[in-house]
Image (cartoon, rainbow, N blue to C red; front, top):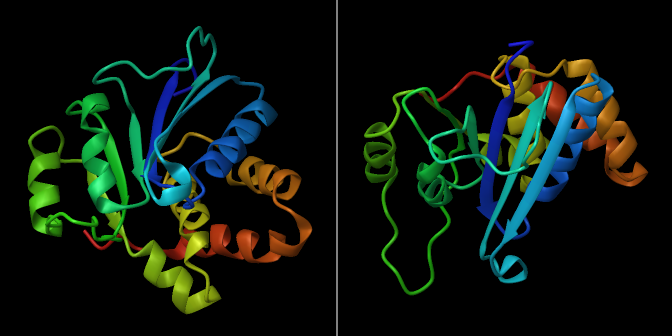
Length: 196
């Protein structure tokens, strides 16, 4: 993985912390002396609309944008939103999905099975984690699901960064009053198992 650039897309809805996650991973990559470029694409983020961030890191990065079918990992903080990232997906792409289905106002929501069936047309490399449920139970705070997911991604080597680098980035970027719970959520993911 040393000589290869890593292409990551994070999708979710407004308020789930995609930009914070991108900043943490970018800081961790910089701590490892990697070249990093990032990009944010907002929907109506304050109203629960779609938010997508892209990040590329490695030896020589000329553009922040992930090419069509060029993602190594798609991290979805909500299940419906994972479908928006299929543009970046190829058979080599891994999906790390939070098992969190938020109803779409005024529309019929898809089932988990329907969403997975659509993704499997592109890739079979799908990992589902009960991150929202775990963070609600352990910390009483579902917003930590994003930190938990990147923790899982790092500890399971889906994201090619060292846990120590990411922990140092969290310490640098997360405000003091939220720091302890974020560090605990990240570390807790090291012992987590995927749903499927």
